[in-house]
Image (tube, rainbow, N blue to C red):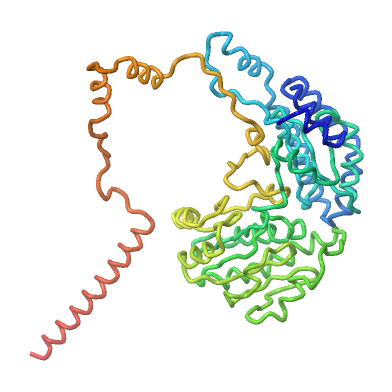
Length: 473
């Protein structure tokens, strides 16, 4: 980044961020620890106000609000715990102590976040905590709106954190600033990608229904990880629907009594209002502000829509391959939930192009906050791993085996050592050491089973024909 020319053209607020990033203070682990303490204290001091603001903005139930706040505070705790002073010193002095420092990393510099409007509080805190732990300055884009959570974040966080390393902006900076930062947009793909659940006939239907009802209806169905459609095998679709009729009203009856009604965002009729008139769509069970519907027409717009309301859609599939082909016809998916026996679940999940694949459960924690960027490893403890906001800056003191080999080759021109070195790698590769046909996979098992059935049928037909010929003699 050309600091002098760029900083002079920036608003003062962002010029401070650039200067703070250049001076390197966020690389100091003690500085980061102090910022974490200030962040946690400010949230705890205003916790009740944040809870009420989340309730007013979202209409979520008290349990859902508590879940969002709890997981946000856990993000702060977990990232703070990752700041190991002793290890930090050991890494810093590896070269001085005669050791390689191959895995050294540092903060990328500036992280610019465009937060998701779904569970905004958690979305901001999760990104901020990870970026701070990684050693970065942080800018978050929160436009002025009527949302109370936005207003609280804008008023509290800038007074809490160092203004040289943290800022909230209402409008997007120019491209020059954005090119100098890591931009994390929680509003773009894969948030727009579809999430699909698959229920095979080998699934535990009771467990599947409980998880899928919650995933579709919790947080008003707005989570990007809520299933947009549930594909159910023909053989178990009716028992599955019977269980939905039992569990959906019960779950929603408990939650909706305590939830606050918030007007739907956007113009035009909602999907809930349109399903009754949609050809090839049958409403299975419904109530105020929610519905379970069975979509029979595979070309229905409902099966191509991103669902952001309390609407659970079912579509029948004839087989595992039918479900796989239908999923892959949508392109890359955000995530899949597969409910099936382990062998079938393995086949399904590895055959569908999806960012994440969960087997026989829905991760309730993922129903809050933003979607992970595609091709990002899932962390069990936090939404973002600090590595996402770091760059590798390895320091190598000792010569590697490849360096020594290359050096010997360059220094031995015309000498027999060249042929000897090359000869080491011209021999045959080690054998596979694998018995042919030692394991039959899911697909192969299908062929074997089918072959047995065909041979059995042919044997029976042959026996019957032979008996008929014998009787006629």
